Image (tube, rainbow, N blue to C red; front, side, top):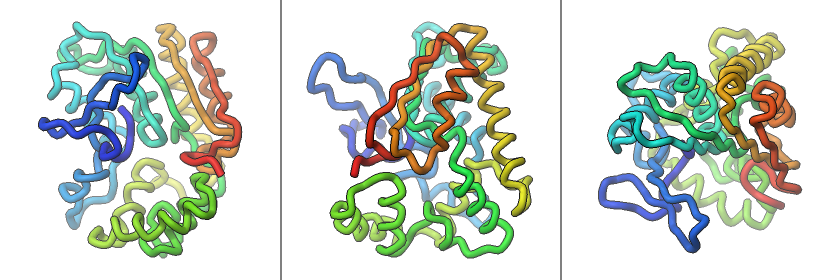
Length: 268
């Protein structure tokens, strides 16, 4: 359930990865590239493609679990998600805990760990998203960076130190050279689920996300499913209220850990 690119972890012949194990406390599990990420973006690019919704991401994880034999109901499943993967893991856990998933493919979710989960981004990012949706100009979406300057802006947003921003920006920009110019804008908009809202409806978009968070959380609370939320104190992408709102929704089964000084990904 970890979002993003699996290339930092050890590649296995089956096309998934197994995380390195320098000591016995490391996670031992298969981690694929998330839908639309890494080697998995080309299949999504077609004229009618408008991004991947949260439901799409959940279905993708379910298909992966079925492919590796983890959906037969016999082995407890721990869901771990970072950023987009955190939002996916939280909603997926609720879907399988409350029994709405088909019985034949239901995941016996044991516990959930959310790292900077994109359950609710900042109001500034919602305002930007709705403005681009209304007026165009996908280059204004920081997540859709393509040039080195745009990549530097993104790196600063997620918390990297300035010297690293300058060094990493050319690599990030190079990695997107062959992708459609609006690919990551569509990915961002699809996850945000803001298509139904107009430019001036930031509060409505935020309220809808908060309601979805509370709904999933209440399901996990009823089942007493343990949930851990980890978020940096200098987070600028995910709204600062997310750990508090997850704890409120899940109740005593939720633990929160704050990483002092960390942003969405880096530490200045």
